[in-house]
Image (cartoon, rainbow, N blue to C red):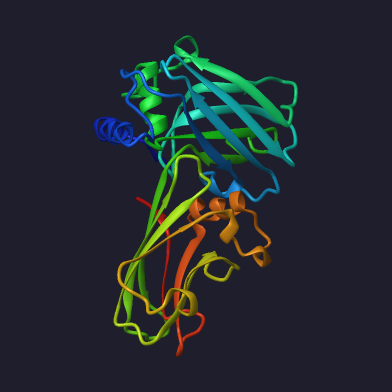
Amino acid sequence: MKRLHGGWLAAATAAVMSLAGCGGGGDNNATTVETTVRAALSGLQVVSAVTTTASGSASLTISADRTRITIKLDTTNLTNGTAARIRLGKVGATGEAMFTVYESTTPMPASVSNTATAATFTPVGSVTSFGQAITAILAGQAYLDVSTAANPNGEIRGQIGPVTLTATLTGVGGATGSGGATVVINDAQNRLTITLTSQALTKPTSADLRAGSAGPTVFTFYNQTTDGALTSPFTKTLDATNLITASGLNFDQALGYLIGGQGYVAVNTEGKPTGEIAGTLAAQ
């Protein structure tokens, strides 16, 4: 397992200050508006991935004066939950707990609410203050995990706030085309924007986001019929209304695949209708 190192804090602080300039966040020393970030929890995001039917959703509302975080956690199909914690860590890395949302010998209820303050904060690495913890959360550098009796190291997990994923697209079956994809999930985790670059493709017809290389298509983000000739770069913003229901997944479940390292980007052409170039998304 990877552990998060301390050198990220200055960059994270700069990222959050940038968010403040466009209304998306704010540094911990400035008076700003109340800010809510969200996490979609799944077993796929746990390091290493856990096979489970459990899932969850969490919202963290940071007060305008940056003195408290109101946390609401809802879970489904979770058995014998023992603890829920907010930890410092990037996608695919593990970290120590900054806040405890729930911990008891009594099984965790399906809905849990709590409030985090400086008094309930535990320093982790270079994050030594409550304000720095807020900076980390707003910069997508924290996650929430839920432990159970069966999986004490975490049965479901969700990265909090914004997430950026990238993929290098290479030719499938000897194809010579190439490209790249960047997926940016917003801080509320209810929308994602994908930017595709491509070279040397022969008559592209569509481009998909799939739940695994052999999994179902969850989004078709380019369609020649409706979008015209494919340009490079090509950008499309997607939300739950764009989800392909035949995939059998809801939007949060689709995010679980993407953030959990199983998101697959494929660009289809007339000659290769199941993918001429393709690649797997990974966190930056």
